[in-house]
Length: 512
Image (cartoon, rainbow, N blue to C red; front, side, top):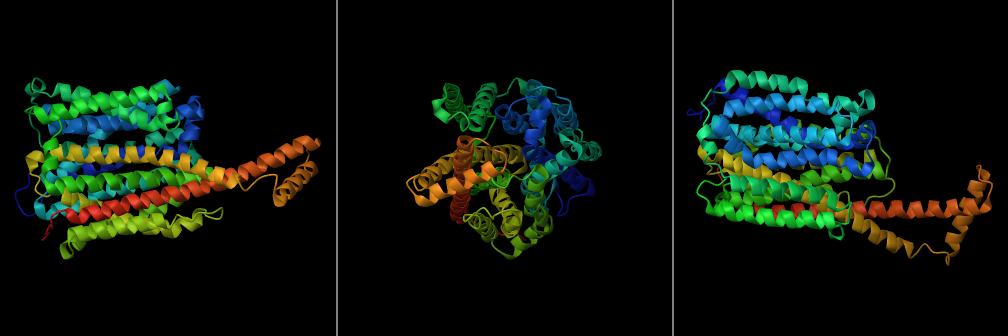
């Protein structure tokens, strides 16, 4: 732990190397999203099964994050960090050689497991290696990883896939990981392992948490596709998650040395910070999920085009975030976070009037506004959450905070996917009530389209009429889908408004 007012050069190199790891781990949550169709074709699996390529990574990541503090004490921080920093690019590169769905799921799960370690450990290094006067800047670097990586992930993945093939997506981690490993090797202090802690481990908590989170994450990812509780598989997963996670909470509150320090939630600022973090996580992951879906399904954009649209959500943050710590010394930290969340919410409300004309250029201003909002959000929230957290509690606080933010993102993405489906059905039924054969304009449109198809190669009038009716049905579906996306953006904006309302309840923090 740093004792002076300024951290040493070695400490800063270690912190920055840790941020590279956190950035790459978070980047890989989204980097395959714009390339799923190509990856599915490459490994010969169906569209429905391709979702497991992302799901398996998330399961590995979300399970290991709360385990990280305990395992880093058992095997020593340096040894555990270096081992995972080496394994991450290895498992990532191995995914490029997967030839079937089973091997891809296994390798992505392992990649997520070792990558998930890098996120809370980067957070922990800020709290243990930097003095209080420099932690705000360190946390702004962490915020940059959390917000910039998801925004730029589809851009990088889409560009590589369209120009060099989907396999290259899994090699992008290699160069930065090599830099990270070398930097950490020379800057992290050597400490002995404490294998005796294995006997004191909260193994009941570890087991119930791992099973419960894996079941919950799988249910969230697959629920919408399988119509939720209409599927026996999803119902069993939900019951498994509920049972094991309930047991996990009971165990953690009773044992002397719990795996996850749930008692930290008794602290006002930590609790408020976690609530806001979860709600922001819903919006952060949700916008990165919804916008590519819209551009792909409605506007028929390819992976690279989707990535270019999203780039303007990420790039401005590189300029803004480094100035946030200075801003927080002049304004109330809660006010900075409130302004950021409000701007983020405004960017979502700017997308609630989507139409067929809403394509890439139309999203430039909303994405720029979202970039400004996101840049002002994570650092203040993290400062509020970590106020009063000592170095001995840093690992536990980091694991709990990062796990719940990612879990909030997973729950939010699943809920938004279901909302989109239901609202599309609602609008489709509503529009369909007006598009009937009893209306003259509908019959005239069918006749015009029938003549069009007859003039373009269809010889059978019955087939031409069938195609005309199908074309009108496709128009109705597309318009309903657009309205469904508009509703989804409105819900994300509302979630952010709730986060903005909750933030002022935290205690005032003064930074100097």
